[in-house]
Structure formats: structure tokens, C-alpha cells
Amino acid sequence: MQVLIIDDIHPFLLNFFDQKQIAYTYLPDCKKEDILSIIEQYEGLVVRSKIKIDKNFLEKASNLCWIARAGSGMDNVDVAFAKEKGIILLNAPEGNRDAVAEHCVGMLLSLMNKLHTAHQEVKQKIWNREANRGIELQNKTVGIIGYGNTGKAFARRLSSFGCKVLAYDHKENLPSDEFAEMVSLLTLQNEADVISLHVSLNEKSRKMFNENFVQNCAKNFILLNTARGEVVDTAVLLKYLKNGKIVAAGLDVLENEKLHTLTQEQEQIFSELTALPNVLLTPHVAGWTQESYRKISEVLAEKIEKILI
Image (cartoon, rainbow, N blue to C red; front, side, top):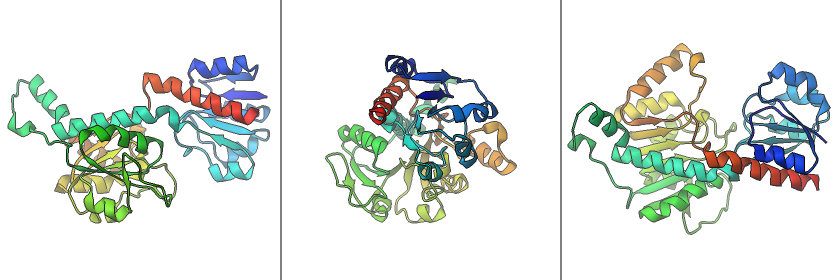
């Protein structure tokens, strides 16, 4: 077994390979063209988000048996073609679900209590209590779309706030639990004061948050997105932030996160979005804590060991 690691990874996984006497090549700084020239030598691949594992890549990876992604999604992998080739796909949503859940709580409380704007004002010696009066999470209804690892972890943390938690998932017949009531999407849209997105990126979820989605929401609401930026149509988000239908937005992800490559239209939207006081932005770090960095490698090691037995 020869394994190629093409992204920075926690030493835990490297130690695991050493202990299991699995040969690996660690090239966290390599370029895609360099990877393509050697990938046929390897049976295993460990990746984060550096490159797209597309059809061309997979065709060159003639001996590849498994791909382990150090993260929660597989949206940078051509999943259908990989499965067609019989390649086993592994990821580690269990490793960063707690980090994402805590980030969501932090974003939500900051937006509801205007912590981010009040902090900036006080630093400028502006002492405006009334303008920074917050609202309480208690007795509000939080809607979680996507009730997998991160959605469930967020719901658990909300349980102590005295709010009602509704959840919708595209998988049918998921049971309600002690933290959330499973409902239809329309029910969630009718009742939610807060909507938090926890879906993986695919053709069905891409821009699922669009004009029609917002129009189906009965209340003005707060939006949280720690999933993938492409799930939200940012132009639509901006429109409804301006007219007040969306009360505030906490965004850890954007449609285009390579900010130096924004198109003219994206640049205009980004400029307007960042100027709004009711928008809180973070650079795709919700699942990227000191602890989750290690946890992700621990989860991958366990899953890799199972397929090698």
C-alpha cells in the first residue's frame, strides 16, 4: 500500500501510517501537475481542498483504491465517477461537527445581541445603548436544514437556550429526537425565526437558498450558513437583507472564496454585503479549530483502518 498525502495534515494521521507500516509520501506543497505525474503509483490518497479530484485526475489514478478527505464534504471529488471506478470514499464530518456547532452558536448570539457592531462603536467612544439592544434566543424557533453531523450538534447546543428547534432533511423518515422535531421544509419556512444551513453541496442543494426559498418563509428571519457558499444565491441574500426580510446573516462561507478572483458583479455584491452592519463574516473557519484539526485525522485513521482490515 502506497499513500499520497497532498495537503497539510495533523501528525496524528502520519503517526498512524507509521504504526501500521503503511508507506506514504507527504507532499503538502505540491502542485496539481506534479500530483498528476505521480498519482498512478498510489493506492491511497489523502486530500483536503487543494485541488479538484475530477474525471481527468481519476483516469490518471489507475491504481487508486481509496480517497480520504480531511473534512466533512466530498464536493471537490467527482463522486459518481470515483464510485464507477470502485474507489472507496472517506470523509470525516464527525471530526469537525462540534467546532461548526459552536461557531454557529457564537455567530447567532453575536448577531442577536449586536456584539460585533457594539464592540466597534465602543472602541470609537460611541456609547449607544438603544441602537445595540439585542433580542433573546429563548422562545424563538430555530430551523436547521440538513440534520446530519453538524445539524445535530448545533441542535444539541441549542437545547439549553429554551428555544424551539425544527429540522428538515432531504432524507425521508428521519426520526425526531430530544433536540429537534423533524418537519417538512414548508413547515420550517413557516415557523422559523432563524434558519441555519447544514447541507452538503450537490446539484440539488446548489443555490437552494434562492428567491423562491425566501418568498416561502413566513417570518423575517436570521440566516446562518456554515455549509457551502454555493448553497446560497448571494444576490438574493443581499436583496432581502436590504429590504429587511432577512434580519441578519452569519456567513462562514461564500460563493467565491477566492476574493482576488471576484467578477465585477461578485465584487459589487461583496462590497455591498460587507458594508451592512447586520452581516457577520468569517473565512471558512467554522470547522477548523485547534481541536478539530486533530479530530479529523483521528476519524480518518479509524475509517482507513477498517477498509484495510
